[in-house]
Length: 295
Image (cartoon, rainbow, N blue to C red; front, top):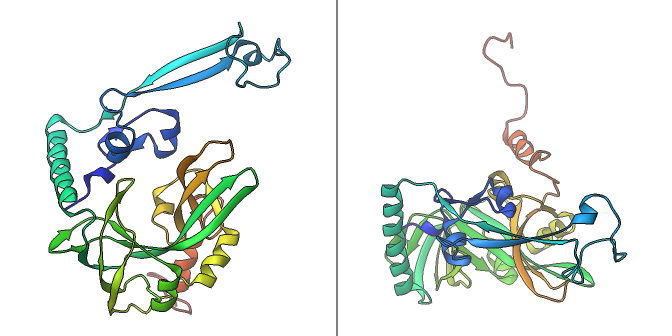
């Protein structure tokens, strides 16, 4: 079983905000979150004929706002966007079959406690960010265990899935990437991801012995963490890249989104040297000979 909702090779969309992802959008965004295929969606773009020409507002305003509609210089442009299928008709038909089978499997199993077995591919702190008129606060809500594959009940799941544990569980168990474990849990679909929000009866079958996160190191990383403007694959799959659930109430309305934090404090993927540093640290000390050298 695989999760077709996380595929990013099915649809593209030229909505401006998707430029950061090279206009590739997940099947979940199109079919589950926005439900914008095939009808598409609308964007309303407002502008001022005077301000666009560098002239002063006839009403004395410095920028556009809620009082601008009705002004003779106010422009309201309605733009229609429609996701485009990148697959061939035969490939899209297969995708639809996979989607129907996955939906049926989810309906049968969601919310029911199952025995699960998997190897931890990576483990990251799970932060929640709250923004209001007083500023932004980042809270440690636990840790996210990421598996590339595993067993859910008797079903082999050959795709990424996720499990959340509390700070107390991580302090007690010290789970690390490479550990193999069994547990009991029920899953839910979280923005297209298969997520087990609570684990119980955790049994660690084997230990990798690699370094892992503890509450103290996660809280230190929180102080230096930086939000990245984009979500490149390099950072999403990096041990120091963590997706954060954001609740923004700064404008009187609640908006939810996700942003990517670099826990190493790098400002961009281009400026990052974390992986190079990890490679150097893994190399044996001393000089290594090269083909053709005299050493």
